[in-house]
Image (cartoon, helix red, strand yellow):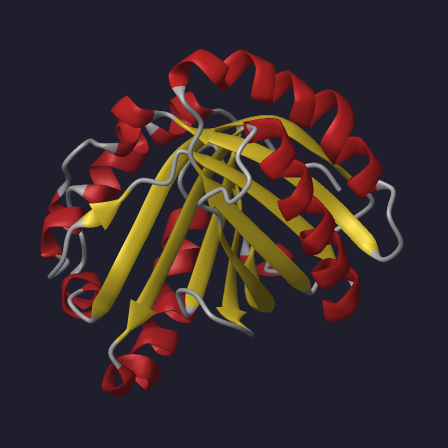
Length: 231
């Protein structure tokens, strides 16, 4: 299934182990419902890592990237609740990008998801984008067990905006610039697609050993606009 809009917030992070129980209560009962209620936000999802990489991946889909740089979202980011201020102090190794969606296709959401993060030199942007959209990603969207394939790039200006919530974290925030997400109905299907994707992206970048950060995740929680559509 394609994303529910052309704007995405993608967040990876680790967490201090002692904060786990409170994190889940806060994220399920306050934070994600709060985010989903913002005008223009359509859905939020949280995943947990099954292999090496940041422990959690959080994905928010919005109508456009303009929503994600707009007044309603910034108002929330600049007025974090006391519970938010407490919990985000436990975040570690945070990476967060506000993105434009350049390609999105599929037949539905998947319980398993892999993220691939990488950089592209400015002079290669147009060529790599075209190759990924026209050649690499469409066959993956049709592969066995794959339910969705998505390509996003960070809006650097919006991603770098300093907010009260960002300042409440105890560490800085990385901004991944290019992101590919593959969803599927089983871990082995997604894992096989990841192998194909890593090789294909390396070919697109003309790098024998490209710097690619990739992690396999499993879905933990989904939240839509209202309690009656919480899944």
